[in-house]
Length: 544
Image (cartoon, rainbow, N blue to C red; front, side, top):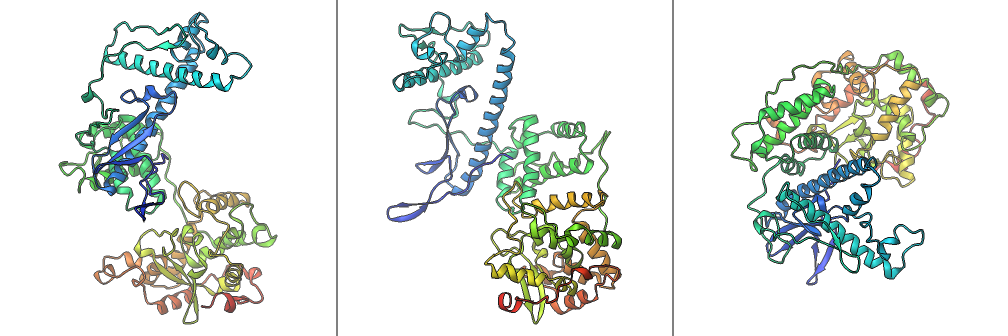
């Protein structure tokens, strides 16, 4: 994932008051915001329209809009730099096969070695074993930078006059390369002049990256953001930073065909085209209002040869649950190393009786384990800064089943509270690409199932959610109550629910309590996991 650093970093004192610093690489001149970033040493060729730094107007005096455009410029800068370095590495690899007599000439142009007969003391130190002195290091650095500037100039001249004879680099009496005289740059041909008189662009074209960054501002699910970004960058890699209103259906079909050649599943291809279609629909509200159609809509997935079959998840059978709860994790005191630790023990136990998504459980805080009128429950919510739920309808309270309490879950949470932990599973971290707490336990659980002989690929943690819904139906629980327990009830289009906030949009709790009492797993064998005093420490540490 390309990281676009566009968050406000900190505060500084300006005129005696605290003012938010601008994001990295953003500067303000007058009323207009600019993108400014230094070009890394040796990469001048990648940015031929600039000298030592890229300085480009963001074409707005609105900070919110400037942040979106800044994120695009940072991404484009990183992509351009990465492409240049790949090209440079490939060129270096090719030159390793050049005849020996040509290598010094090629190296001279690239600033690695001087031309024959022009080996100066400062450059000679790069070949000798002895390191250069401090007095020699600065002139050498200046010569290297000059050589790199020369290379960029030669490249630019060749672009302006293809096939023209280019003047060769020569050394002055002191051995320093002298750049050929280049024609004066036309200020209209460069996006931004390097003098104090800055020239603004007529207006940035809206690319898919612009639409993505604007859409991303209101999103909270990092996994979804990452998936959409993947599609955007793939499309850009194929067609370049093309304006959205210049995208044609043949271009979209070319992207589809590329995905087909990679043998991606039909569902994956449909998702990526759907992501790009969503961005265009989002952009058509403000950013590209003049567009009359969406080129990503109604693209057929044809010629799907060699596509992977879709994964059909299923619910656990009771005998499979008994096999899991008789495994070393529950009978021999085994705990995985790393983040999963205690979460590995409790997540499979909560699954059949709570029916929650794995991330909803992994992000629980101690205060989310609540007692309401003497009934203990889990609050599935997004009230903490690093908590996320799928949608507003996912906000709910699920009464704890008696089996979970008998296994000592409340006692465990009380222990975490007594130790001063804020979260139920404090060893879990959300420092990963998707910024989710379930990253480590999710991966561990799949490996653990394989290790105990449960290698059916249709089984994973989400299979517990399938099982919970299935058992609710078999236990005679109404569909509406089941939906309320799994976080689907409030997503109904009923107007009386739509106009309620997530905290208030709750199904009657007493009905949920009765439903959980009805939920049964008579064939399930987990009596060996029961503890003697399941409420030990609960009154002192959890009742508030």
